[in-house]
Length: 218
Ligand code: PRP
Image (tube, rainbow, N blue to C red; front, side, top):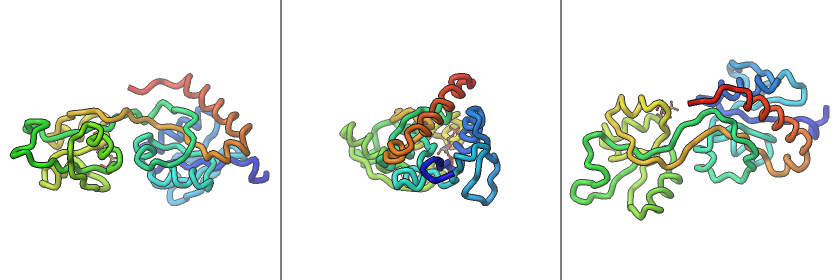
């Protein structure tokens, strides 16, 4: 089969990986749910293979055309600002990006009118949120375990994802504002969608009908 007919799909390691594998499985495209150290994975469909990368890299591979399609969360996608198409919401990975602060805070005031320091993995989205609200903040970018930042004095507030709310609660934090509702989406390379339109449409039809039959989250 020549490369004009094949589709390579980038999947994110981490919390979206298993739901994405299940979603493709419902659409009749089966792949190994435990790829181990392999980064390129074949599927039950000889015209489709998968690439497993860090979540922030899905949009990079798709924007560049190294992958035709990808599955990523809208949190990372909006943060990256990547120029990709978003043809389909996939209905899983639903959570929200929020501002949270310690329960004992007199939100949103800072003692002595101090500028709030905000720890986050999403500096661009956090900046946008506070800039739109006309509230000056300092952003501290971290790569994970954001909820510990207020406990250790690294920041006053955090901007992070909330799903069950357990992590906030376990760290004495309270959700104050919702910035965005997040979910998994199928993203597509612009040129690939033109050149391989039939393959893109056929896959999207399979995913759509599989998802309309799937149990809904939340
Ligand atoms: C995510 C997110 C929160 C947590 C929210 O972290 O950043 O920390 O999940 O989930 P909850 O509301 O159900 O508790 P992740 O597990 O991806 O790890 P990280 O903190 O290292 O980014």
